[in-house]
Image 1 (cartoon, rainbow, N blue to C red):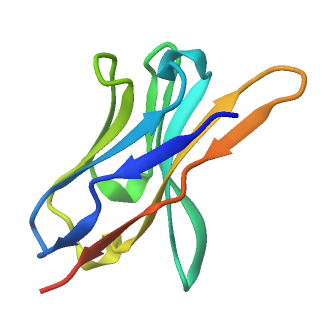
Image 2 (cartoon, rainbow, N blue to C red):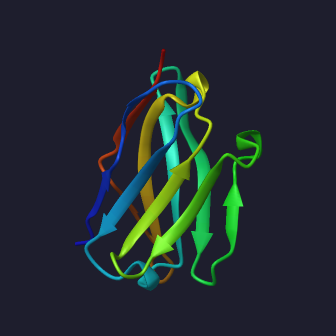
Length: 118
């Protein structure tokens, strides 16, 4: 059973930065795609960013380049650097991993709260 454990959330002021990490119970390079999603009580879980096994990244357009997804091979973590945070970024952020096969398998972490408020 694969486990994903997020960390790094917290309370910050608008304009500040946070770095989220997702530690996986097996090699992050064993997944076809890993990513970050976020959810608030008012909206469904939303795609934020993904990185494929070949390193290709994709981002939510509205982020305007403020977030960067990356993989740390030394720590076996998936990271999300979030800069210039806005109140609208407030959400629970979830780590996701997908393993394609027969069948395809999707894993989720338990989430970490990010609150942007003055």
